[in-house]
Image 1 (cartoon, rainbow, N blue to C red):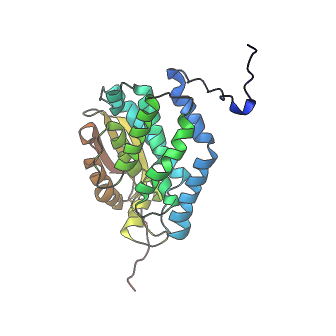
Image 2 (cartoon, rainbow, N blue to C red; image 1 turned 45 degrees about the vertical axis):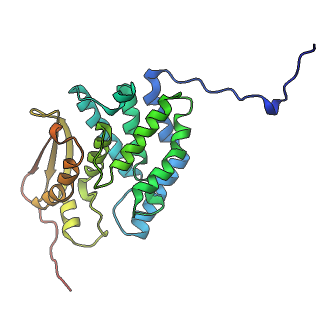
Length: 268
């Protein structure tokens, strides 16, 4: 019997080989940084937040800050021997880094739809991005396990939700720590002199350090004592609901002479 030729249109396309475990984080990071759709969603999120609602940034700058802070928190907790959620699936620290990176990248993309209930909108949009980023890097069941953990972390950054994993708690804390120089995560109308804007302008620097009594020491440097409002009104509650309170110590201090932030305030 002669050889049967299979039409080109019916041939199975070759699958990309799975990346070695050691290179998974770098491969995912490169895809996140080069994704046109992700960049577009970050930009759309800022159009909603800044242009249309006159609020603070929820776009690419916020995302990159949350990524950096979250990965540092993860590193310190890992060094301290804290059990990560990824381990429940038989995944390892490299995979936990992937989960934290992706959750940070995707947690606020729902702003492209609307600020209200944006966590749910992020959950709707995220799988479309995750499928493309993880394809060829993870095989099943690990790909679905990573996706599930990322989606949990996105959902759990919602204010009233208590995270069930360390990785999800990290995203909640890192999101709240984007507060340097007017970048507070308490929504405020840009340019309006309120306690939100004044306290946000008082935060000079947020440092993530190795702690002495606990694995992590968050040191906040302020130019004005009004900055305490940011810590007490938002961060304190988020930390309490993060599941990480036992691992994090926080200190705040004023550097040098206390600076004046506003000259005059009046109620009209």
